[in-house]
Length: 492
Image (cartoon, rainbow, N blue to C red; front, side):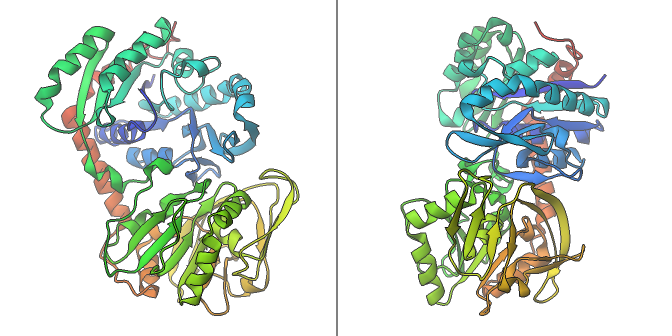
């Protein structure tokens, strides 16, 4: 029977996703059939799988690290926030419904069956399943009906390793405090701990590791130095948004940060290019007047984000940008915002409504039930440059400007629209810039030089370095032994 262990955290953003990706590559290099798994994820950064569903972007990266194609069973429950209090619920890759946070607590027990089914499927095809928890293991207020952390670990008998982040401070209190506040039977599922993102002389924290071990009874499995290359891997949520380094004199691409920004990893390949600067503009700041391109990224709630964009005055900035001769590109939800009108008659994003768009493309969008989830390929309409990406959207866009499409797809469809003057374009395709030739063409249009970067090769090199980093600083043999400790027996 396949072994499994679970990486939980003392809080969000302590490095769980990165650790799991590194362990996936590490154990795959040892010849094991490895699968990543996250019972429940909350993220608007999602990826389309080969089996026609969607999962969290982090699980797709972890699958890449393991050397396998991503599957909907690697993340059976995905929550995609649509407001401050509600989210779309995706179960085994397909939209299940939507719920407010309070109502979702009552739904969780119904979803445990799907979680356990997906976990069993992965175990049947693997030697090792590495599970990622969600948020904090110490969220005792959410423990009833939990499917993401200790509820899952106890139901499946999966031993847990608890990770803390020393870079944010208070890691001793976070680890020892977790043991103090959680149920004793939950604490018994934790067999060891990791201290992540350490900077400085490891000898200075030896007493700290010993103190945590003595107070918790958990095995110290590793003090992991900060891994600087982590910034080159896709971030899972908006906490990971990062500008490229300042590059004076290079064309500037600016991205307004709206509340429901999604799939912003579309910009990661551009951040790696030294010939262009990418800058995310937070609320409260104007769009820079010297931008070469304003890029409107994807959105989980297009109409709400459009209204937020107007409230910030960015619609005025964008029109001034175009008067100065700049360019605008809209990706997915950003494409929908560029049109004359967005209609949501079924209330798929909230109350049924019809709102004016930015009017920069002569198109209209009608939201319709059903989501297109598909990997696609084709070529640019201008220049026949090959491209590949994926579609992940609700809504159908039509209008005169679609007669000038952004791309021709291999399945015979056309995608997107371009304005008559060629300076405004929109497309439903995500992941465009991972293709090196496509990225070079895009940079040339901005007057920027492209490097010799092979983006896909770079990602694999970083994953290799991450695996080596963890192998050096973590007791990986102890992890493997731990993975087979319960061998699937249900916890107490």
